Length: 90
Image (cartoon, rainbow, N blue to C red; front, side, top):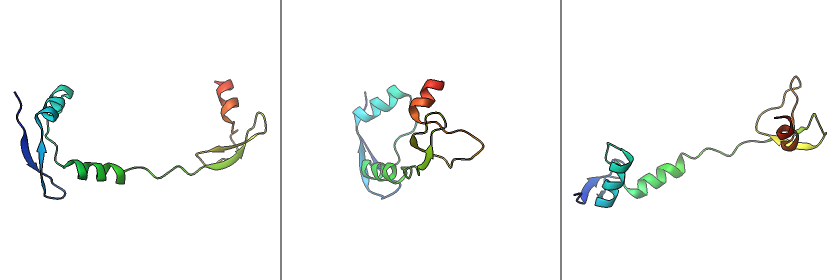
């Protein structure tokens, strides 16, 4: 039913093959647009769009006094809990 198609990558301008198997997969998932980038450019785009690692801040648990790290700047008006105390409070 599907046949391989040759498409042009919109990033690098190289030809790439949109295989019959890939077309079938796209149809099963309900994707309506053909891929605009070759595999290499898709992989490069995914790798470059990764988030920077979270900056962790040192804090002291308000419940048990243990040292912990949190992904936000601690404020004095709100208690900070270590993972164990936080889970126990839920």
